[in-house]
Image (cartoon, rainbow, N blue to C red; front, side):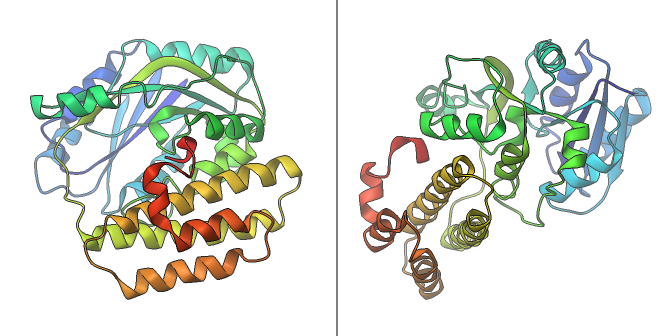
Length: 322
């Protein structure tokens, strides 16, 4: 059994893919690298095949699918003790994963949360990188082991929570015992997956070590169609979590779910405010959330946000939800 399975979805990243793969191949740890390539229109598929041919610990699966489904596929092929999900345009910090594996082994962890930083693909992103420096680094001063519920609550309150999978090392057997497959979505698939993994975890640590470097590069424009899709996904996940709240096993878990609900609602409202034109379906969806939350003890603040979403732009909702 390999110590680590690195799962990397690949689509149209030919300019960055070799740098990404080389960074993992330089790692000292015993790792298998599983590439799930989605029939790219550039040379990404060929690059994957070349690496698989030249490195016995690299394998490639060609299947047309969104990134979340690619991660599911990779996980079914994984054989390592630990699993790590990376993006194909980013890089790993040298030897950092080996240290994380040692920490996970020593403390018998289900998941380990660690730090990441942005870096600029071109000078035009220098200012943005600087503005977000430290954003993905845990703020905890206590690197002890906690339950997932306890750690997630503190993470949300401190404003350090992220649903990005590259900020975590997972014990594979834990993921198998508590399956939370990624949904078939093109965006925000992590929002619908990572919180439930936290809630199931029994042993979690957060450390400040920077393990991952996230590339800032030109992406798609946030036009109304994309923003609307985001609102709808956040709204659907809000309703799913609201149902989860009703059968949560204890008060601590219910408290964490409320924090997650507020975070989801805030994201939905802030995204809706960025839309250039009012959309009847978005308005109706938010009205439905308002109705859904009636009767819950935490309803008042959420209803106020839905009725006056502009207050969230001024930070009234609390910094730890942004």
